[in-house]
Image 1: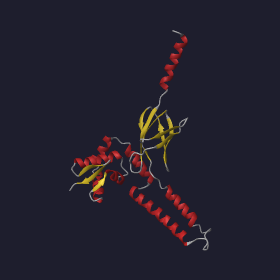
Image 2: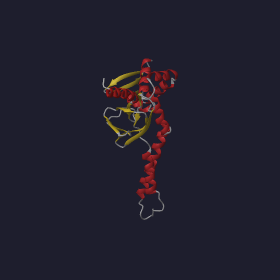
Image 3: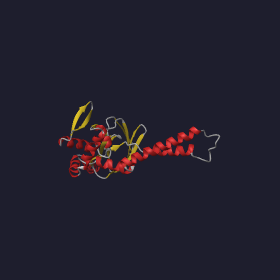
Image 4: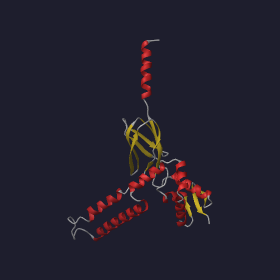
Length: 242
């Protein structure tokens, strides 16, 4: 055998094991925890990888390192830092959740346009501009405090949703068996809606839980004879039994 060929094969055998990559994959969810379609994803590799997820699923092959994973749809945009430390297949779901940056901008606009005493004079500021500024400020405050009262701080809420989404079905089942409060909370929500609610609306009310956990809650309630699940179109309607 040609010595050059032998040396080439030896070098190739030494190089190939060192060439490895991890597979990063996941699902993109919207604020209702439904799969979000037609999302543009970008990873800051060299060169940059871009992928349009039409189904809400994505997958990237990445070598070890730290990357910025960005998902964009319309005015919604999130960026997550992903650290790949070893080879394998890793799941990392993304959540295109609305932030309160728009409320902050409304505050700044209202403060700049309507509450800057240095620029306001009685002759140049009509009464209706004060009214509009006040309404914008009230709307921003009410929306902010409603969301904060229901979900707590936005940063903590996002971390909680991501942590719950990474759990396996077995982990969800173990939590439901250990904490009956999840089932009681679901029954309380259905009662609040006159004993009848769509599964999509129930997931919205339990936004801090993953879609998998909410589905398991409904299944467990159905198994215990507490509710009845009726197929209606592309969704399910959950009816509380007496």
